[in-house]
Structures are given as C-alpha cells and as structure tokens.
Image (spheres, one colour):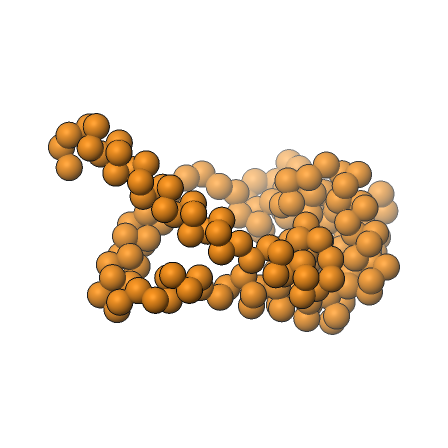
Length: 164
C-alpha cells in the first residue's frame, strides 16, 4: 500500500475493528461476577499466580497507588485469598502470597479471560491462519522494546543497586 492516505485509512479501520472486538467481548464483568469481586481484585490475584510479590511489586504491576493496593490486599486477605508476611530481609516490607483458594480463583479468572471471542472462533481456518501470521508479525515488531522482566524487577526491589 503505497498511498499514505490509503495506509492511514486502513490502519484506522483495522485498529477500530481490533478495539471493538476486544471491548465488546470484554470478559472483565464475567470475571467479576464469577468471583464475586471487582475486576481489580481479580487482576491482583492473577498477578500473584507467578509467585509471591512484595506490596511494592504488586503496586507497580497493577499500576495503582500504594494506599489502593493496600485496600485491595486487605480485602483479599479477609476473603482468604492471600497471605501477607514480613519480608525476611527487611521487616518494613510485606510479601503477598496466594492461598490455595486464591490460586483457584485466579486460575478461574484466567480460564474466563483466555476464552476466544465468538467472532474469532467463527473465522474460517485460512482466515484464522492468516490472522495468526499477522498477529505474530505484530508481536515481533514490538519484541525489541526494552521492558524489564519480573525477575529483574524482583531483584531490583530486593536490592535497588542490583543489575541483572
């Protein structure tokens, strides 16, 4: 597509369709209803699936403020979904860990969110294969971004002077 206006129009159409697909088939309400909690609390549980996190790490991953993360963790702890313990290397810090009930709730949320939208499932095999190739190309295009991995974030949270 060599015409810049045609390319811009195509980009706008594709992006509008992608947004509509995701936003109209939004599973957040389904997750909230299934778990009986706000989606932000379910999101916190899901972030803990990879392992225990400090309150600071959880705050960073959720993109929230510290007081809000504390409210979320307080509620999850009251429900029996998480445990908060003292960090072994720094008594001022707390580590949040999923309980078995919390892990089950987080996994249930993941199963709901992982279900493909009907419109996607209805694609013909050739169309699905073409979309798969396009999405892989989009993923590859963004792969070179400098994003700190969770283990690097954890190491830095434990020792801010460390570089992995």
